[in-house]
Length: 107
Image (tube, rainbow, N blue to C red; front, side):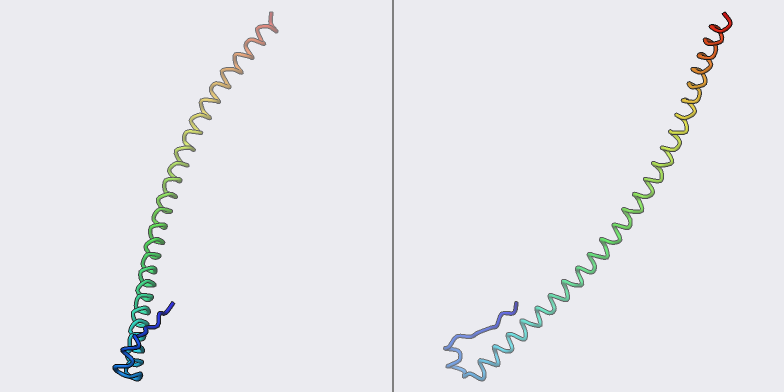
C-alpha cells in the first residue's frame, strides 16, 4: 500500500507549489523504487528458500526410502526364519498326533 508523501503548508508557502510538488514526487518515486527493490529481494530470497527446501525434502525422501527398503529386507528375513520354525513345530506336532493315533489303532 503506497504512502504519498505530503509536506507542511509552510513548506509550500516558503518554496512554492511547483518545487514542493516536485520534492513530493521525488520522495514518492524513491519510495516506490525502494519498495520494488525490497519486493524483488524478497522474491529472490523466497526462491532460494524454496529451492533449498525442495533439495532437503528430496534428501529426506531418499533416506526414508533407503531405510524402508532395509526394514523390508530385515522383515522378510525374519518372516522366513519364523516360517521355518513354524514348519518344524507343525511337523513335530503332526508326527506326535499320528503316532498317538497309530498307537490307539494298533491296540
